[in-house]
Image (cartoon, rainbow over all chains, first blue to last red; front, top):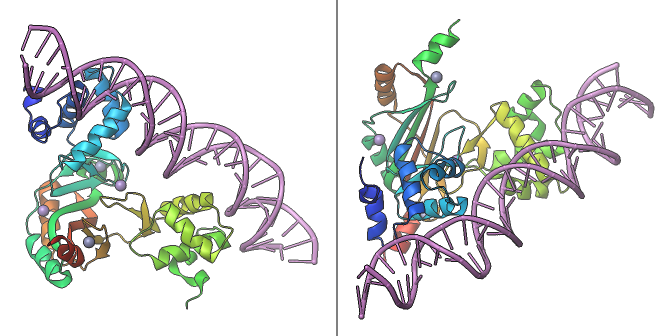
Amino acid sequence: MTDPRQTPMAQALREAGYKLTQPRLAVLQVLEENDAGLDPEAIYDRGKLIYPSLGLVTVYRTLDLLAELGLVRRVHSMHNCHNYASARTDRHYLICESCHRVIEFPCRGLEELMESVRQQTGYTINAHLLELSGLCPECQKRLAT
Amino acid sequence: MTDPRQTPMAQALREAGYKLTQPRLAVLQVLEENDAGLDPEAIYDRGKLIYPSLGLVTVYRTLDLLAELGLVRRVHSMHNCHNYASARTDRHYLICESCHRVIEFPCRGLEELMESVRQQTGYTINAHLLELSGLCPECQKRLAT
DNA sequence: CAACGTATTGAAAAAATATTTCAATACGTT
DNA sequence: AACGTATTGAAATATTTTTTCAATACGTTG
Ligand SMILES: [Mn+2]
Ligand SMILES: [Mn+2]
Ligand SMILES: [Zn+2]
Ligand SMILES: [Zn+2]
């Protein structure tokens, strides 16, 4: 049971000069516990279990704040589009089109591709999102009647 | 100037038994002309230039319909999350983090990566989305003060 | 460990988005 | 050309997000 005020996100908030309030800590804790991402309403519901007087407005405000600091990020999937999860710049999701389960995978060998895009477009590239979609093994079996 | 009723999307609509109405044709034409994706409001605005009495409701309804038929797809970027664009299974966007401009790039060399993911996870993979984000040349200049 | 000044809060109101309802209309068929 | 029905836009409703504002909790200072 790590002290909620000592997590990396909490520290970063404090270092940026923001107060570590109960409502914010509740939101942070919910985000820590749900790596795959939740929408504001869901964060609100779970946050209230931790800090019952939490307001939905504060969830929105805290998400905005964390997003500005780059600590949190929207996770877009085909079926939910307003999910937030703690940030990593590079993300690699594998999504089952049938059961919508999401897993992550290690990503190797994108560097060449990015270098060639860089040269052809003149853009600098500092993050990527790769989403593969298909069928998970279970759904393959289930659908192979 | 190709006949709006003969485009692949229009054909598909007709073949699925739906009527090719003026409002629908206007939405289709807007989508054809804006490959990178527009949100319902923007589609509405441009659609009205083609068919002035177009209603926003019809834009929503047409997008739902096209999405169900798999002809159109949401494009999620960091800053706009309700954009629709005509569907392709594989998508490659390069997004400027500063001005939010979106361009597409040709994607080469993802096959090996996908094959390795396939082997390690047992998933079949039939589509991918790769989103790179960085700074476009203009914004690089502008920010290099 | 008070007492203080201010950033932060939740409730309520307002704004922005999205969906449902319904009578009028345009489409495709005959 | 006439018909039956899917589709339409306006209006009403519902949902989601943002703004406003007085009350409060936080972190600092003495
Ligand atoms: Mn989205
Ligand atoms: Mn990668
Ligand atoms: Zn599955
Ligand atoms: Zn730019």
